[in-house]
Structures are given as structure tokens and as C-alpha cells.
Length: 239
Image 1 (cartoon, rainbow, N blue to C red):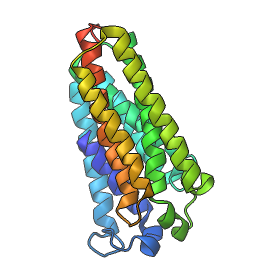
Image 2 (image 1 turned 45 degrees about the vertical axis):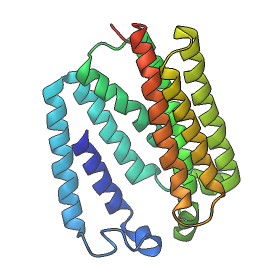
Image 3 (image 1 turned 60 degrees about the vertical axis):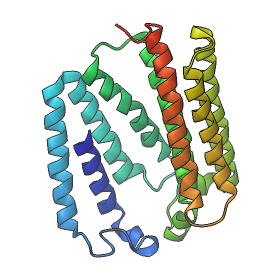
């Protein structure tokens, strides 16, 4: 997956070279730190190594890895800069745990399909926060995103609403499965971090915007780790 992510990232920089020159001149290609040819070489070599490595794990891992690569390239080359860019972002977040699961565990249980669904929902949550962080730069570059379509305030409201849904589902299932558990402390910290991230939206400065989704991502990761531990201890993730 690391190789695939490198390839997707290089393709993203290639696709964004022109708009980055207008609003993100410090990025590698506009700044002259990396040539287009070098970026293309990284893309080809990294994706090739990533797919080859996935193939050595198994057919399932290779197929999911290839889907993840296709999803990332669709985002880079077609949907980025459109109000639909959140869709491949969310799908990619959902594919990551499936890729890891197929590599480490094998069979997919019914409960894990629920995990996948919540991961996609969390991906949409983070995609909204990420789009809002780039709102000013996207307007300067003329890029149409879900945030430029909805506006900053409505994007934040949608992000907060989805964040609440993700948290409530994880918390409710934890309480239903095991009641009071030490994992509730981890989940509580993740929930608190998620709303702490929302709080950065009220601050000024170039760094405050990205902190919304970055802190939320850490909070969702912590919440998810506690939730998965509860599901696993209840035997719901074992085939």
C-alpha cells in the first residue's frame, strides 16, 4: 500500500502542477524541486512495486490494491477539483482496512462489513473537513470542490453532523456489546479529539484550517481502535 500511495501522490502532483503554480507555488513541481519526468517515474515505479507486492500476498489483496490505485487515480485525474471529489476520498478510506484485513486475516465477516461501512462514513467526514481546509486556495485556483459548492459554514456543519453519527454508532455498539469496558476510555478520548478538531475551524491562520481534519483523523483513528478491540474481544471479527 505504501508504494501505491506514493504512486497516487506523484500522479496528484503531476495533475495539479498548473493550478499549484497559481496558489501553491511551494509544492515540488512548481518550485522546480522535482521535474515532471521524475514525478512520472516515481508514479510508474511505485505503483508497479505496490501491485507486485500485493500480488505476493494473495488474489484478494491484489484486487483491493488495484481498486485502491484506480480510486486514487480517478480522484487525481478526473474528480479532484469537482464537488464529487469526496467520493473517491471516502472510498479510499474504506478500502484501506479491507486491504489490511485480507492481508492479515483472510475471510471477511458480516461484522467487518459494518466496519467497512462506518469507515466510508468516516472518510466522507474527513473529506469534508479536508475540502474546507483548502477552500481559500481552491477559490484562488478556480477549483470547484464540495466546500466551494456548499460554502465554508455548511461544509463544517455537514462535517460535524457526520462526525456525530460516526461517534454515536461506535459508542452505541460498544455499549450494546460489552457495556462498560476499558475501551470506552479510548473511544471517549477519540470522541473528544474529534470535537477538539472542529474547534480549530473558529481560529484564524493558514495552519488552523488543516488542523480540523488532521485532529479529527487522529480522533477517529483512536475511536476506531477502541471500537475494533471491542468487536474483536466479542468474537465478531473472527471468521
